[in-house]
Amino acid sequence: MPILHPDPPRLSPRLASEREVLTALKTLPPEAHVFVRLGILDPETNRDRELDFLVVHPELGIVIVEVKGHGVEPRGEHWVRIESDGTEHRLDETPGEQMARQQYLLLHFLRQAELGFVPQITRVLALPALAVRAGQGLGPDLPTCRILTREKLRNPFVALREAVSGGRPWEHWRSLDQSANYRIHPRSLQGLLDALTPMILPPPSLAELMEAEGAVQDRDAQLILDHLAHNFSQGRYHVAGAPGSGKSLLGRKVARLWVAEGRKVLVVAFNKALTYATQNALDDLVSDGQAVVATYHDLAVNLLEELQALPAFTTGEAFFNVDLPEAMRLCRGDFRQRWDALVVDEAQDLEPAWVDQLVGLLRHPGTDPVLVLEDPAQSLFREGRHELGQPWRLDLSLRQNAAIRRAALKALPTCGWTLPAPGEGEGEAVVSRVSSPAAWRKDLAEVLEGFRQDGLDPSQVLVLAPHRPSTLAVRDGEVIGPWAVNAVPDWWDGEKAGQVRFGTVQGFKGLEADAVVYLAPAYGHKDGARLRYTALSRARHRVVILEKALPEPPRPHEETAPKPRPVVGTWQRPAPSLSPEDRVRLLGALRAVDNWKP
Image (cartoon, rainbow, N blue to C red; front, side):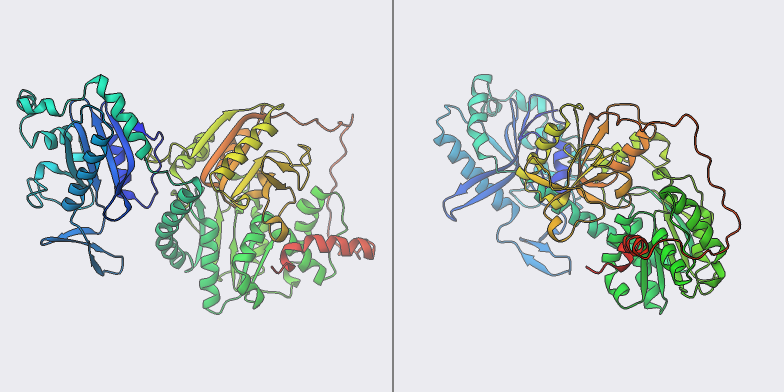
């Protein structure tokens, strides 16, 4: 691999052709130097002319590699850029004229640097997206030997030799006297590198890269999701999707299609954070009464309250996992509210019997459309398996850097999803550094400061841990590094918008952030692999893993004899046993998602 300047190079995801050429140039031999994006001042325009790539090699001399990507094509004696709507714009310069000016300015700059020896410069045009016939030239200044097609990029060193030698056999050309004008002696190489290094253009910030990567992901995902939504709105489907496959976005698109058909839609998930995000995304439908978005438990409390059949509040686990579902089952035929379509998101966290209860809330339970979305590998709460609807499998990633997806899937080899192949521009996407229980706060502060310096906003960053912030002695509003953290579950609007979200892996399932920091346990957590898989899959563009960061929290004191599990008998719809004050507090908390209007 050659020496890269800078290392690692940063190219925007929008520059697909340039990234393809860089991937090829990375296969050059180790004695080569590859400069990425150099700027040379053009005194005629008083603006920098940008060189896409500059290759410096002891035998090749200096090679300018100019890249023209998709939509740039020759038209007779001119070149045009074809926009996405089909309109054509004539370029002010042909690539040949552009590179001739680049060569003149570079040669003038190097001579002024008083290096003593300036090697010959060769101009090469890379056209990975343009269909060029074998042996085809593009004018007197662009013979076929100086055109890098996609085929030639398979072996770029051979192609550059051909360009430098003018198409003559390499060994024969090396024997000619003129080849000496290209050779760079070791004593001259360092001076040349020193002169070129200050010309490297500032790389785009991480924030700019993430914005460009997100735009490309969203553009590519839109057509696929629209197509899937149209199909999955036509009946009953059970979709198992990989991380980043757009399950929640798909559910929202399907909900909108059903509303457009005149249906009243019920959208249900397990955790409040995902439900709140979906409610914001469908706020217009919720406000118009065309959709209800709620967690299963919030919905159950509201429906049972309408019937005055809400069971007495006991311990949290028994109330939510036993009492509420049992009350829903017994009151199934009595509910007054009915819907015409159902979306169940993150269904792996809902018991099959609970989903069956939701289907029973449809106006026509046997025929109304249903979409069940899940990733069984993210099941952190229960092992329910759903058999409702026609099964589909989405083994793809639409909204996640491939390196992050690969790291997430490797964390849980039994997840069942396909590992993506390595790609270009992924070196910075996943960073793992060793921390410790004594140093994790300091290490986290350094990571957040790095994000700040790279242009990220705190709202783009999510810190995830296996434990609640309170267990880690993290206070809401506490400043870690450059930013305050938001440790309040399910709340990141208003005054919290300028803070870094800090929460549990479990609490943010189904959601995403541009950048995620995962505080990995320093002990053998029983769900360690699944937690890591879920945490990493929350990141779209960047993830930093602080390994061995968190100590095992102290275990609660265990009783000598376990308390017996309460036995749930026949439901008699008891009169509410809570005081009016307790009932108001309980319902206020449980309805937070259902009643919230941003």
